[in-house]
Image (cartoon, rainbow, N blue to C red):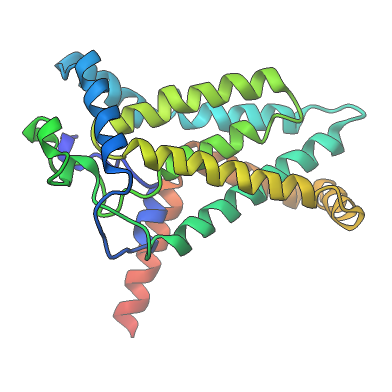
Length: 256
């Protein structure tokens, strides 16, 4: 697959469902300084480009790591099974809510990816100038996987901290390096993710919500299938769901 076809920014479903009237990037100077420093420390080489692409395309070392961690804690059977499952349901709800918030913000906040913006293009080699989607805000890959990683904090702080670091190294950095996102896109994803988790955790303290989570967590086969689908799709970046959604949209438009 050529570099021009890299889907570096949002997950495929999100890219298909959102649009924004684009303006220049916010925090121009700090973004430019960070990118300039990054490329001075790690100049573009074939090896580094291949390395970045490896992490973008190889879901086993990026997306499925987070899905596997969630499934591991979901599947443990002991006296705390219901409690752990409630926490994983919380992070799932937080993830969905965070993505919906960003989709609502995208028509008002957005910019071309740095490799396609005239103020940043000179930092990248010409073969990267077509990288990224039409709107780089925010880094949805970072957002989804950070919420999954940070959402495990109540269950295992050690695992959560390791996975949060892995998000930045294996998910965010490669996409910034090839010009799909600004550093501020990543920072915004982290802030939105933390806010969504905080709201979910606070809501989870309510007695009614606790009872609801207990009922959902003990829902039997349907919740097992729903969680399997969610974690599998999250692991592969919602590509299959995105393709189905685009097919349905095209079919409806044709009928109309």
